[in-house]
Amino acid sequence: MSEETRPLPAAQPLPVVEVGEVTGPVRISSPQVSAAAPAVARAWRSRAAHVVKGVSPPTVALGTRTGGDDAVSQRQARAVIDLALRVGEAMLSTGASAADCVATVLRLVQAYGVRSAHIDVTFTSITVSIHRGLHEDPLSVMRIIPARSPDYTRLEGVQRLVDEIVGASAAGGTPMDVDVARVRLMRILSAPHPYRRWVVTLGSALMGIGVVMLFGASPGMWLVAGLSAALVDRVQRVLYQGGVAAFFAQAVSAAVSALIALLLFWSAGQGLDVLGVRAPSLVLISGIVILLAGLGLLGATQDALDGYYVTAGARVLEVILMTLGIAVGVAAVMGLANRLGVSMEVQASTSLGGNLLITVIGAVMVATGFCLNTYTGVRTTLLSIGIAILGWLVFIGGLAVGLGGAAASGLAAAPVGALAVAAHKMLRVPEMAVATASIVALLPGLAVYRAINLFLADNPAVVGQAVLQFGTAVSTGLALAAGLSIGGFLARRRFGLDLASRRARRRARGTHVSG
Image (cartoon, rainbow, N blue to C red):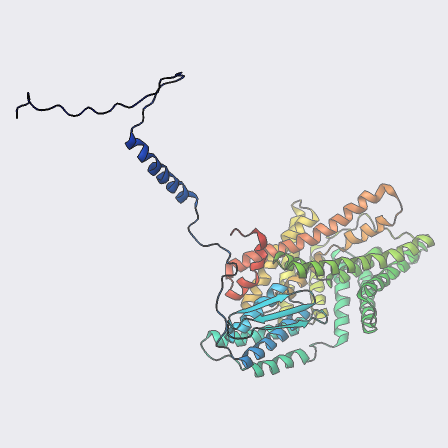
């Protein structure tokens, strides 16, 4: 068929456009474009979702852990949990921080094959729970912490026993039998102290002497301060044995130092020269430092930084209450002095420093006295003395370059914290013992004394100065704790943490962890 005779194709209907009021350009959409639009939109939505949507599981696993210690027998689980509770109680009672206690207990139970243990510590109790799977009953036991008294010889013995058990397990061998370990633990905790009680009193006297040496006092003042500190130690022991509440024991102990200072102030006003004493206020300052050293401020701050807020809150409250006890005892004697017309104001020239050699010897005596006062072993005492010398020299250097007292204290505490962690990791000595003994000389006894004195002046014009002195004392304590924490953190990063230590300090991240 030729092109001339071929029929024309059927006419296609034209799109119908309604004619009306036209306000803009007329667009005619084809059916193919309308069908492709949803597909394009879905593709772009998929690309946008891929950019913003997470692809990895949450950082913090909530309720997703499964399994348990199904293979651990009932008897083994009970024996392990009993040993763990005894170790934890001993550590908390002898001065360990909450994180160190939890880390040690976790290492212990893992050495005996228990992987699903949970440890909870409060100020007055420790709880250990073991999840034994879906088909076995869990175990959860709590023990009460009856008392807290720094005893670093026993703490070191407990840590060495745990290290021995963990070391045998890590080497692929069989850890010590649980019953044998319990007997060993009981021997450590029931062993006599390494020093007689009079040696502990001597330690308090050495601390008193060392504190006044830091202020450049004369040899006569050394003797008076040593006798005063020894008397305070004996009074405290009698009060505690008599069942007197800690707050009142603290107040009476502070009052004893204040009464001795009052007698010296009165003698000076009468023209009597007592052993060449020129600054009676130093006797009371040394007494305040000794009482502050036993309050556990550093341990409370460490618990807070490690995320154990319940324990830290209770310990901070205890520190505040005991500090108020010191203030009450000192204030009572100062009120008596005001009635008698005796001024107990501290001299404006009183400050830390002086002859460098004398102050270094003073720092050594303070560290030695604290170690004797807390039953610290010989090796730990020698380490503490060396680190205390370094810390004091750093503090003096900070003052020399123009830093304030709080800033210089924090600067000095940082290397002390790092070396304390290093000594604990390498030599297995109690970290808290080394750290605390090394910074006792930097505690703000002078600022506390001045704050109390100004508050009792009954002069509204000096209230601001009293608040400033109190703020100085608080900031110095916080700077010491922060410096120790920073130094310890850096040292732990250098040495690394084992699994138990990471689990124990995981709370420190708290609610700030990004999920």
